[in-house]
Amino acid sequence: MPQYRHEWKHRLNGADLVILRQRLRQVMMPDIHASDGTYFIRSLYFDDGSDTALREKLDGVSKREKFRIRYYNFDPSLIHLEKKSKICGLGIKETVTLTPQQTQAIINRDTDWMKTSSQPLLQELHRKTTGGLRPKTIVDYTREAFVFPPGNVRVTLDYHIRTGLSCTDFLNTDCITIPVPEDPILLEVKWDNFLPTVIRDAVQLNNRHAAAFSKYAICRVYD
Image 1 (cartoon, rainbow, N blue to C red):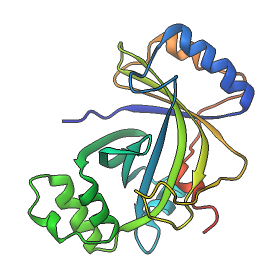
Image 2 (tube, one colour):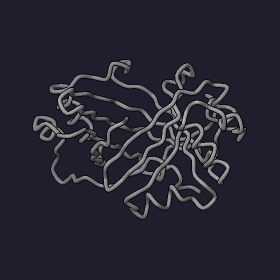
Image 3 (cartoon, rainbow, N blue to C red):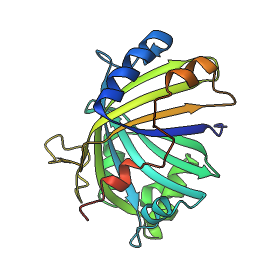
């Protein structure tokens, strides 16, 4: 059973990014999946006709959920369907692997096959799509990730965030995306039961405080 995790988010500037990158390299290990320290992430977020997921995030609703499909470095050999749930600031993620064919079927809103799936998450997505949930927009960005085993800490630096606007052609590498306003940089810190002092100190910056930030929300800015 996945564990609820704590999470901090900080919005950074370019100078912050340089400082944190150097600090984190001194005390944490790079993510083993990164090539030359970074990797590319493409996500396809879901929402309903009332934009419930977007509105709940912007309104700071304490109990909320969102569905997305994600793959890395444009490699369709590993695609994940993910459901992220938040309760009073704690987050949990449920994941199931999809084939490219299953992914395209979901994009095409062909979901009847999920009713008989052995995966509860696919069954749930089928129920939600029947109720109006549908692919909404693509979110692209570059990530640097670091890990620290004590506390199961993961720190990520995300930048070059781009939006697919209303495009949902997730597997099409030629799908046009555009930069979001202000070219934001995001620090995320996630941990299980405790955050070691060495990591807490490393991510501290003057005049930077934890704040809500949603890549999905900022990628809906042109809607």
